[in-house]
Length: 262
Ligand SMILES: Nc1ncnc2c1ncn2[C@@H]1O[C@H](COP(=O)(O)OP(=O)(O)OP(=O)(O)O)[C@@H](O)[C@H]1O
Image (cartoon, rainbow, N blue to C red; front, side, top):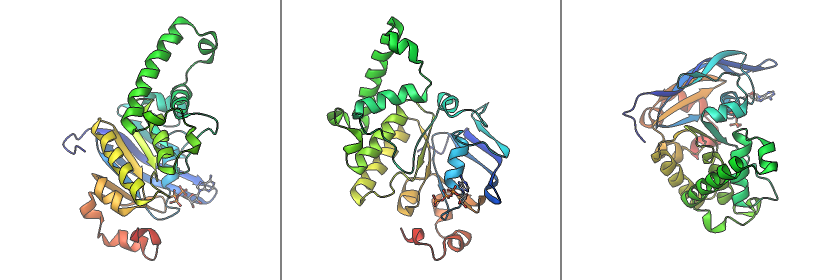
């Protein structure tokens, strides 16, 4: 965590997205400071996942702009956005059933960085050199996330916590500047949650900015430098955890909802 560096890595500017009559994201503006852990919180249906889908190019906004450092990434294709340095994990873990941990992370680098198929099929010299480099980098990442010893096991058969680590490893393999984590500890037990929180902190220490959607207020308050609270697609309030924790507008938005007690 480093709040001294004030450069904005991600700028969301008057962003809106509607589905039929529902304004899922409504004139939303905020920025993420480089090297921070920045949390997005809000009640169910507030627009958090829609926001992540807009940032990663899965869907296009009706209005507004998204900028990564100096680059306008609004409505770019997901693979292009990944190449610019944004990587993500999903709310529901998405792993191929017949791939080992190592293969999952290796294929992730090709899929998300737009690797070309033909050189891979022909196994050109350039491809083989790149493959060696990629494998070395993946070893480094798997050691880092604690999965190297089980690299030959099927990813989808691992414990829930380790499956999440595979997803994080796959996201790290694209060398992101900004990592988006969508409810990464949902469904995890206490031990897994604690270990993942340590991992996020270590990832952040490597200089990777993190934007995280979470319902777990202990996680949010412990890890975040900055919190943006959204409700009905709009920004409700923003600030460091000590400001957000007991903010009357936040209490009101969450009133009667289970996640405020999480
Ligand atoms: N593809 C879609 N088509 C129609 N409506 C959608 C679509 N995606 C999201 N919505 C609606 O947009 C609003 C915001 O949904 P979104 O999933 O972004 O909220 P969320 O904050 O991520 O919720 P949760 O915490 O439950 O995951 C909701 O009213 C939802 O029903």
